[in-house]
Length: 454
Image 1 (spheres, rainbow, N blue to C red):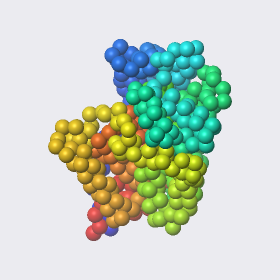
Image 2: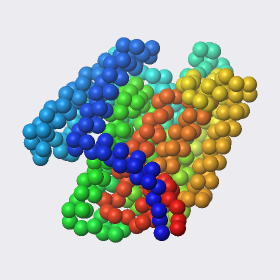
Image 3: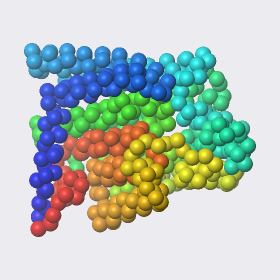
Image 4: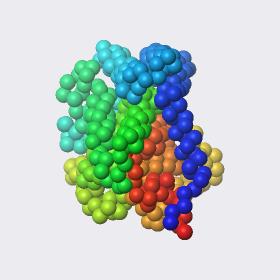
């Protein structure tokens, strides 16, 4: 028999109560209102000029979304069944919010940059575009240690490409044609939108025929709850300020995140091969996807599909690495290993005040202590995977979200913006529930193992 943890029940009940208040509009209002305040503060106080430019445009977009939701709430009081206050209308508002708070400032900054403004892109944009040019000319996106050392001291940091080789593909359009729409952020946005659209489609096509079937109104209600959770997950990956700001000014993390969400959507749809391909594409872009790939492979093993997941999850990153390895092994090692580990010619500027950074900078032998804590967290997650491997996409997403949150907190060099990964993954998890009743064991696993056998 399975006995559920009442604490987990209470937490879930409180979240659902908040999320469902006024048909979801109450939380929408809070999201857009707080985001408007954040964007306005960013426009006034940020020391980064691309961030200030984003805030000035996004604040208006979030304000318009806030006013729209207020109008929806007033209409809902007069006509509770109006289609203008339902789930479809909320999807429309979310799309318009993303267009005005992310795509509009992104296009604006790209056009300004093409016109000669040098303060309309973060360094990541330039790094990726330089990597695309090097890939086109030399067959590798990386500069070797000697070439980096030969750069002026103030330019050595920009000589590094601390990404996997696949990221250079987003820089190829700029290498071929110098115009606003070849800005790498434009293609980051295209990749992000495509991956999220595929994820939404995969989840909506998930058949309601597995597990213990529900019928009639119960099945419809379950599907509606899943679709509402899916909207919330999409909001977390698009209009949440940490994601909107990142895509509009830098952008390289968003296609990686979207591909990870797509992989989890395929897992929820019981498509292990496609899940492996999606997370493998993400892993060919950035190391942040590799832990997600590992957890998905463990999920696949519980369904006798570990090999199908691993073929894409491991094969695609290896296929992306091989050409760079054959062209210049030292350059690959310097960029993707030595620099991220803090052993490059220059150190990473990623220094947000999380516990790992504070320990590394304030205590004797702090870097060793922070590294030991990071390893300990990794061992704890590995033990969790070995003892209670995730059997559902929900459990997989939760492990990935909490695991990345722990890693970001404990890494000696990290950025505040990396929080977009755990925030989006944890918000995405409820959308991965099947729109039917699931077997008892699966329900228990989706509650993060907070069960006891009797």
